Amino acid sequence: MRAMRAAGAAAAVLLAAVSLAGCGHDGSPGGPAPAGATAPAPTAPAATAPGSTPTAPPAPRPTATAPGTARPSADPSTESLLRVTRSGGFAGRTRTLLVNGDGSWTLLGEQDEDLRKGRLAPGELEELRTALREADFAHLPRTATADPPVYDGFTYSFVHGGSEVAADQTALPPALSRVLAALPGFDSA
Image (tube, rainbow, N blue to C red; front, side, top):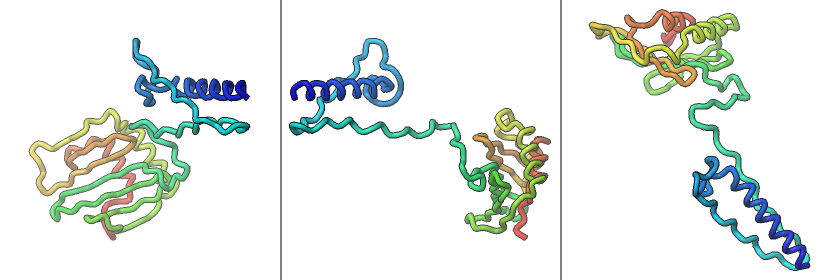
């Protein structure tokens, strides 16, 4: 009996040591401990009733995806491909166009009310994807403004692949003009 308890205790200590191997010096996830740091002492296993076997500690929970990395979406209709917000103009209205990975899109108004919905044809979706690839968002300037400013002009904000780029309509880089040309438009009718 004593041998079983000793074996159970040894297994619990070994399991705790293995689970702490990928933890920081304070027991939190984050890799090995800094030089000279010591790992916290494993807790003693709970006493078990005679004749029963000790239970292993619960398995660690999966961690969240690191910031800045995207999880693959199981449903392309929920995968956000592009968000473009157009603001300004003579009337000073703001419209946001959301395009999903499957080509479905929604045009939102001032208070995020749905103004229009639709779906890009397969050829149109491929044209948009090509324009987005060629635009190379990660290397575009974050802002492009007109000098002098056009007071009744439009300002566009593009969000794609973790990058956000804003530009006045008269300072729009050609690559972003091609992206705009591949979109269904910002009019509510």
